[in-house]
Image 1 (cartoon, one colour):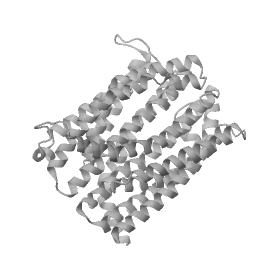
Image 2 (tube, rainbow, N blue to C red; image 1 turned 180 degrees about the vertical axis):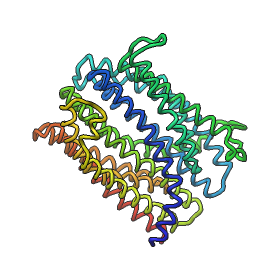
Image 3 (tube, rainbow, N blue to C red; image 1 turned 180 degrees about the horizontal axis):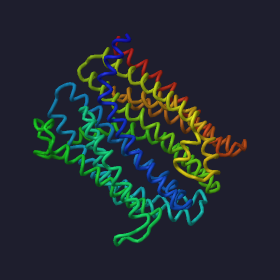
Length: 445
């Protein structure tokens, strides 16, 4: 068994490691945004934090929708069905273009959420201006998602990694330019972060289009010849698989976003500490999230080849790997909390507050790794509807209500919300892992 694990790990690593670095690179832009806005002013940091709390659920929903192209393409790749691969490359681009206006419309009409929470009007206005700036890059982001997951379904994770890492210097440069002004651009502060983000998404799109057009690997597929609109049956199959994934990811991200928005009513310093701790936790989460996409591709690939033993081995290997990695990240958080926080801010009060929150972040690392890798394994089997129900219950019927109760009725304040997140993630991890074991075992028998 150990030998089989090592063999599968050798196959997973070349796909998973670039996928992890791709996620970390995309997360690095948020890391840079947080640091640069925090050094500009506390108000800019709070505005960007609140703005991203509204932006991320929208991004994650569409990321989840297009994530369906990973298992679909991998399944056809395993079954050697090149015609279907080409068809779904076309469908991904069409779907991205159709969804872009919807994504922009949602962003431009999210101000009512801030009004409901009675957030400081000045911070609220800054946050909305930030969101308005990002909407210019939304079409580029969605097309990037579409092409990225089609590529990853064919195990082409290394080029995606190179493109996303290559976008980091552009993000930092654009941030500095638009935050502080210069070369004909006026000083924009937090709003400048939004324009920098939109331009960075465009750079990423140009990279993935160039790779998909000119790589030798896809010459035989003729991906950009005879472009056709997808048939309704193809769109239906994508939505059948993708919408539950999108809502599932949305439930988790929106729980974190809802917590951030509830905490936005607290003093600016508390919001800043929360944003820093959550950003660190999100950075470590990118590792199992990236691996989960590789796990999805491997499981779906073997499913297409009808090799059920290897399919289950691929999922189990990925889950175990994620658990080991998250134990390591938890240990680092507990050992060096103040050092990690001091990277974000020199403010002593913020360092102390954020360091205490990192203890909670360390506690949910284990559960977070299990739930995301188990969900990735289930996606490889095209099992998305029951995981949707599991996450709905775990995050919104158990996790968030528990956090709200502890924070607002038991005077735990910000700590209460973090305890609620731990509870929700733990319930999700137990239920998703149990379902993976049940479904994969049933398929083998």
